[in-house]
Length: 119
Image 1: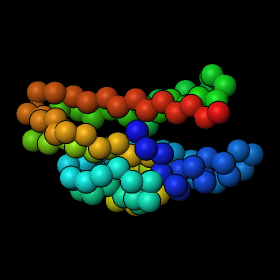
Image 2: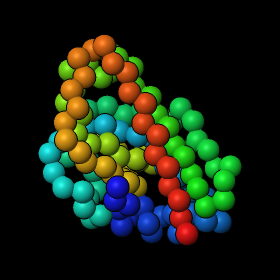
Image 3: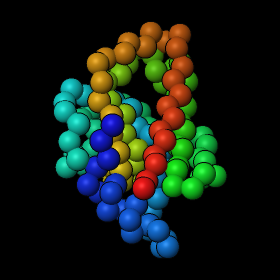
Image 4: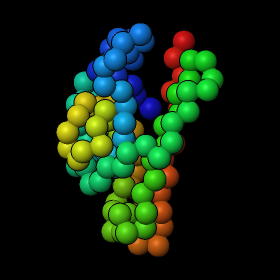
């Protein structure tokens, strides 16, 4: 998993401030390389606000978003990212993950849990 340059800068700034924080996970079906300089998913398909957040352990944050079977139907999932807005194709990319395609046929749901540890 690659933390973007923006994500690194903002997590450092966020400590003790009121800047925008991570708010949603977006999923996509684009094909490309994980690069810290990327600012968006290659082909965003959907975005879901966090269904839960967990800051209970020092130096760790856990963000979770869920996508139902209707949202996932027909998607060839190849990427996801964490953004500071829940509005599609807006906001700043904090973190991204790219992988081989996973096919969703309308019978599967998806829950993504991203765990960040900063030391």
